Image 1 (cartoon, rainbow, N blue to C red):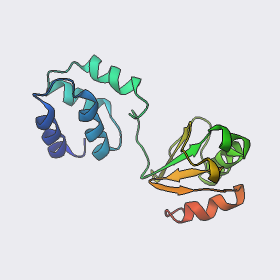
Image 2 (tube, helix red, strand yellow):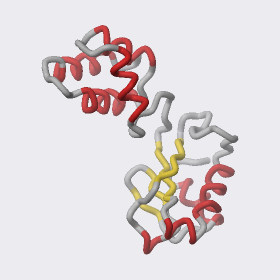
Image 3 (cartoon, helix red, strand yellow):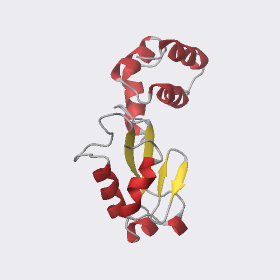
Image 4 (cartoon, rainbow, N blue to C red):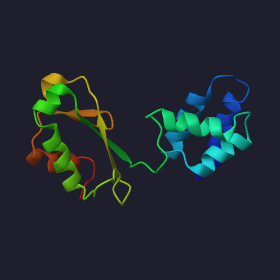
Length: 154
C-alpha cells in the first residue's frame, strides 16, 4: 500500500457516513490506481464494512479494478458506429503496438491499460478511442502509433 496516509484520510472522511462504499473505494482507487487485496482488507479493518461487502462492490461495478492499471487509460469504443467503421482493427493495432498478449490489458511497464467500452458518444468520429480524457477519432490502424507516441509510447 503506497499511500497509507491518504487512504487513512479518505477512510476518516467516509467512516461515519452510511452508504458511502462506492465513493470511498473510488477515491482510494484514484490514488492507488486499483484496489488490491491489501487495501480492501485495510479498509475493512478500519471501517464498519465487512471485507465481503467491499469485495462484492469492487467486483460488481466495472469501474473498479482489482489489478494494477496503467498510467494512461485507453478506451476503445465498440459501439455500433465504431464497430462498423473498424473498431476491431483499431483494437488489434493498439494491442499489437503495445505488445499485449491474449488476456493482457496493461503493458508490462505500467504505462498503458486498454479497455473496451460500449460507447464514447462520438459516433461522427468513428472509429474513436479516448486516451485519459482526450478523444481521438477517424482512426486507422496506421495512425495508432502516432497517437500513442503523444502519451510517451516509445
